[in-house]
Length: 441
Image 1 (cartoon, rainbow, N blue to C red):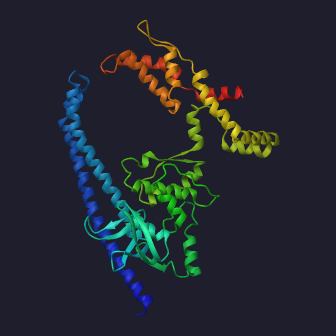
Image 2: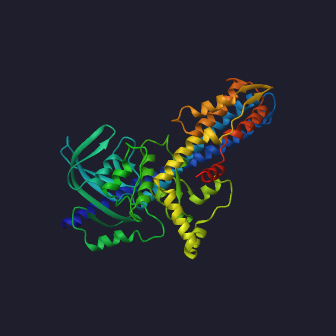
Image 3: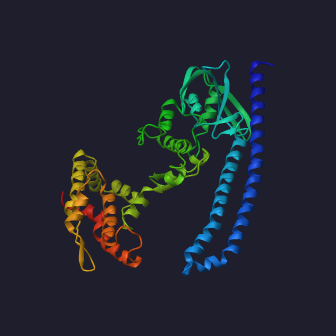
């Protein structure tokens, strides 16, 4: 048997073993999910049977005790639902893995070892159990960065324990569809046009695809950057900016940040609904829940409290048919993107609390509890704190002056009435300020 046939036989055997392991874990996950589902149904039944009296008592003088009793039954149900959702997510990943468990392999020898270790890389990880060998490494794992950043020879990757150095002997890529090995090739070898065409043809779709198989060195650096909280990626149209941003979001969620960053904490602002649909499948392909997505015009409409705004289509139509409108728009854009306009905005932000917020003395039961000057001084102080945050803190300060720090003082209805009065001068009307800005330029 030739060398190529030997390699193919080895890879097909390895693929079969991986799929078999994934199928075994999928069966276990489905059994566990069915069991947890039955437990949830039973637990909900117990809630109904054991807390019927407690629920009706929530609105009586014994309501607090009834609420405590109810929470003792509800909390276990909530925990079981979370466990069930985790099993369902695991099932989804395993089903995808059975179709295509990995897309790359590197042979890496650590400096303190004598033999090369075969590292298979996929969209998610797979291991025999918690203590045995890894069958597939997640593309976001530290060692997987070697595949994206190095050709054969000396290589390294940064792990939680520090930098790990070694030697890279092989970079291999696979095309696996529906559990069948279509082909594979080694990246350091000249790739014939047939393979290149097959790889490029994967992008001919109305949906953006995950690019984990073809991430370049510079892109990988951006995706895995953990030193900077804010990143701006600049590039021409079609250079992959959006795809890199989505892969970075998936990477951050993977990197032990789940408690701080989840799909609910991420928002993608799209220029239009077509673009929103185009990118909708990337994060689910990478094994993460999809994130909140919104179109810029919808956000603007919400901020402006439903005020009618010119749509993008109307704007473009006016640009095409009206030469005078085109000239005005061009001059407006040049002005609003100038450093001079930025200076105007900076000064206007300083002037807002000085000139455009109408502070008033705050009275309670006929007595002045907080003077207008004290309110203004608190807003003008601490220039490093954003104005919006200082205004929110001002409401807390006023309520504290009236009712003290204890939560028991004051009725809820009374506090709500006072809050409404406070809102008159701490709630900023963005549209009115915008009008003021341009009426004074």
